[in-house]
Length: 333
Image (cartoon, rainbow, N blue to C red; front, side, top):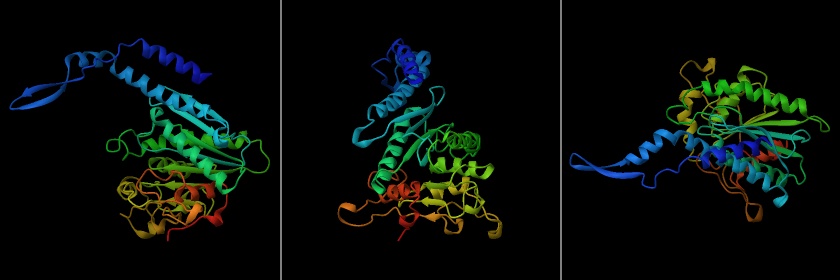
């Protein structure tokens, strides 16, 4: 109901704003060279309507992605979707679960990284949907809920925002509270098994959450991490041996990010910035390269954005952790 009401209000407001002028650009001669500039008509429209128009369009894009996920329920066995949190204000908030987290034996909560906002929430939905599907391949019928958590103000610019830690520390309390809430609302049989999953700056937030307070998680998975604010897995509020990490070939974010978000170990002296990909950090390294042959073969992940691609080794290993099948997780060759 909240989603429908917000969608209606935003669409009505957008419909009431004049469309931007068709001619946005023109050429002028500045000195000896022509320069491409906005037209006077477009600049006048932008000053009056631009920011609000773009916010409405971006927010509606995210709302449509949520509705699309609702519409896909039962397709190829996809479970019901549950909207656990939502707000279109600012960069937006959205929390969506694949499968009922109140009864799911295994809960996995994914935190996206830099540039994340409501407009791009469909990407987080797709990743958690693929993760849910992969858990079913690993264990058909496994009682799993995978949750996309956009419950914080993520840095919006890689250069201007991502180097700063306050986004992580500001968002960490909300993440801890959400994980506690999952525990409190659980009504299934036995004890739930909960996994925190972070991508890019999302791993920094999880690191801050595990460093500064009690993180209600049995496992933590990092992918493409630029650093988690501490220098070892032992410093995180996670059971010993249950910190997992993936770094794909060609992913440049970890080594660039370590200078801003890496931690240190006192025994190694100052000036050493450690990230989960470093052996001395103490995380379980998971394979991201191709494995096997024939129908069961998996593909490799490359770069910073393929950790949740369908049929990849990276996704398979994450799913195995989520369902607690640790013995089947493969390490890099």
